[in-house]
Length: 391
Image (cartoon, rainbow, N blue to C red; front, side, top):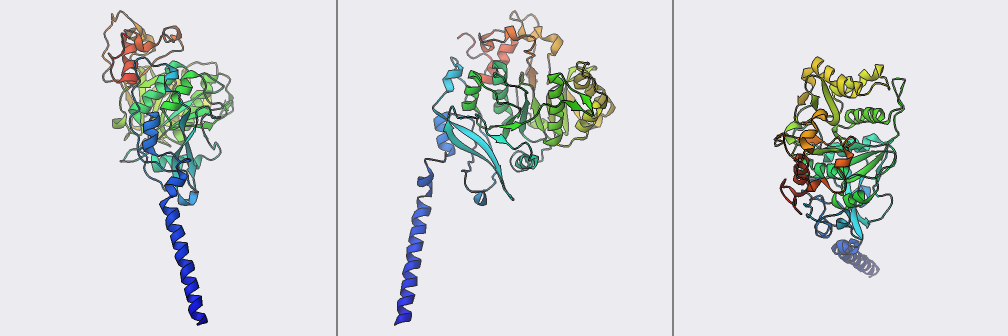
């Protein structure tokens, strides 16, 4: 009899445990709903660029590692301002790694949460490398779909940088957009961008002060060195903040390195770099900094890579459609009279060179201007070079 009672007690206890487990499993999504944001609700609430596959932030032991795919970001309305996109909450991206898996995850946060981006550990490059391998590369590509920006010192995100990041999100559809530097951007355009493109993260970086024992004082030269090191370390795409992408780069991603002429027969521009990780050409280019001179403008960043491309033609592909028109031909795309006709339909991108034409690229908003540069900006923002021009 005693044994029977014991058996009955154990059976009832097991039954109760099973019922409790079933209830918890059934209601897990409801219980976690206030804390985790699904892809569907993220699209409906923010109209952002979001993953089609979403992984909730759960303990590392339960992480899965799906291939993250992205949809095209919402087109902007003609009457937009930076305030158009502001909402009380937004999605924030972060990356986590455990022993076997990595995940790109999103959570809903207050719009004014600080810091505005989550940071990847600068001293743990292996985590980002694993993320790239699992989420940013597939289909026989050598070059991963990850975009890098470099900037040192605090800065207010400008209109051209806002358009640059949107162009990457729209045409490259990267797994991540990483801002490398010692600070995170701020300002009205940055606040708008946080709502439009959630798959951005920050990676702290210290400005290089020397290379092969040679001092670096010019901040642009420090950024030149940093971008080469990023290409060697991670691969992907590096962009200056005044460079815009105009169409898909997918047909280039099976190459090892793709660079663009600035002046054919003379120079290659380093404002847009496309490379696999650990490429031989990028390493040769960086090794050429052994005779770096901080007082020489554009020698190692522009003229030297051209000469190296002539010496090592099999290590890279050089195209004319990254920086056409070039620095000396800017009048072609800022000319409102359109005296010089220019067909940019085969351009992969365009360098705005706003550092020297900042007055023409201002809050009057270049997307309303009747010129070639206006056509390109409208193509990025509205997917139609003629849209919103007369608004």
